[in-house]
Image (cartoon, rainbow, N blue to C red; front, side, top):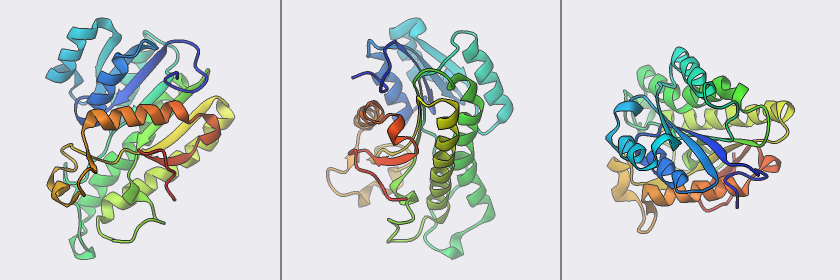
Length: 256
């Protein structure tokens, strides 16, 4: 199965949030594939990441490390300029950007814990950064088969919200889902071979989930490599006919 549906050539892939967790695992997994020409590893400190440096030592020029803060549009413009020096089309872009309790964001248990600063931090990284990434990369997604994926979260589902809490995180992911669905409609007009997906990777052993892992049922806390493999399988299984949809790691749709 090709890395994205209907692709008959080697793929250029860009991973944003590539220096740790699921993003790093995606880079490692994709570089082992013979149908992936290059992986653009994008992160705020990609050039100084020891883990990405190790991958670069193993895979050489197939890994392109680019420093970029997706929350800053000038930084995104520089990313696009850098990518266009070596390719005119990206076949797959995956945003793994997301925070729950970092950079000023909080996992609020109730309304009394809400602050404007926490909500702004959550939305800036979880909502605004992925859609701005898509905005700036759009010229590289407008021809041939292409897939844009952003990691969302089941707790961003309004229909599946039974426990409450986590106001900022839930709402920022719900807003991301709406933006992705809206973008899928526009991309379908610009490039009928384009696909936009929201994917819930499951609870993965990363910095984001670390404070809450004690509450995860046995067998439901995944290693980053497992989550990366499941995401890659989902991307390969869902093409333009599924654009604008929301999927869980186990290939089951999630209600909006």
